[in-house]
Length: 122
Image (cartoon, rainbow, N blue to C red):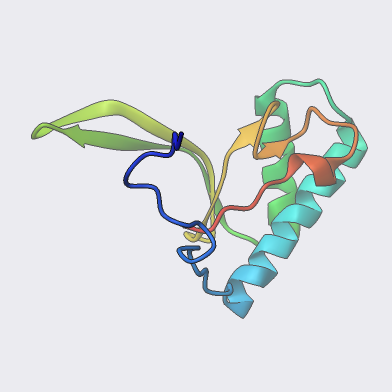
């Protein structure tokens, strides 16, 4: 008996192709990862997200990167704009969003910072 949904498609033939990142984004991303590594190496795991965010931004400045912290992004739903929508932790060079977590994405609550960084390309 086949329990696969009727709209299931072979994932091997329909894998999404991702474009490689531009050299500029690779350089910015490398600097962000280096900054996160430095903060984690210095502070270790277990602190509040805000502490890591402040220190990460300091390290970004030292690496010549511009950033904006705590950006409110309104949600538009059903023709209504809700101001209490999303909040980005850090936007770097108007190109890369860094969500600081003590759980996921740039996760400072790990023994090895390399295990706590996840990159997503949208």
